[in-house]
Image 1 (cartoon, rainbow, N blue to C red):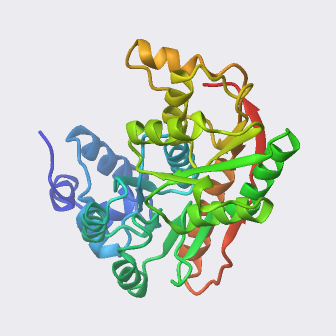
Image 2: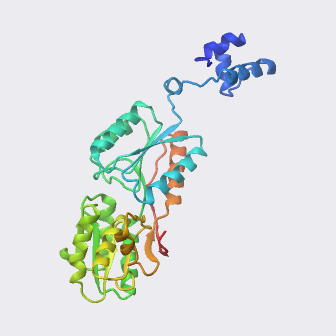
Image 3: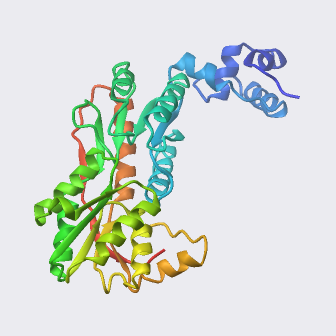
Length: 339
């Protein structure tokens, strides 16, 4: 049996609903210890659970943060979400996680759902280069803090926390050059966003790239394989690859397997963050065997991004008029063993 409302508990305890509400929410109230214990025991005995939606409407505060990300298939976003959850929970907030699949229509539905649940703020890596910017702007203009994470919209008023992709990519390209790469190929995604464009610009800052040196693919492994195979077969000596995203590595390894090319011994590479190992059969094992040494990566400061996000929201909730500058965190180059 459960009691459905504060009124039920008040009736059992012989007190007002206000007294019950303040006792259960640990708010200041002049009430005897015996009566206080009685209220708590009645609530526990009948397994009382507060109506969170009603509480949100009354307080205009849900105690929840909406988080919308475009991809859960890499290591980056799950780790970022995990660390954000820890940092926000320590500050008294829960998170509602949504995966937009980098699709603007899906993202819009998630945003509308989060609005209806009265989340206190939105943290979002915008899909499809900000296709839903007008909706985000409307949410922001109602007073709900909106923070972009990992991606950003340069022409919008939202603050953001990202990796400094341009500087990090330039350093990664220089790292390859110092290891003897004289001809660099840039492997990237066809669906663009501002952060990916920053990474490409950073490589261009370090080395001259011809249009044919920039290989843009859909995220499907088969297309990456096909395009990389064509380039690898006609590659010049001292060639190297800059990978815009860690999700591109499996397709590149498939192509390397077909011509028995080891990485990074036979083809120096560098990319962003450790890749996810996908093994569905013998061919996958053969592809991953092409890795003969630790994978060099540009490792983003995921913990720093999560902590900066939590601090931004904490200040915003305490002082809504507070002004912030965008945060661009540095990344470090690491030679990581494949996970």
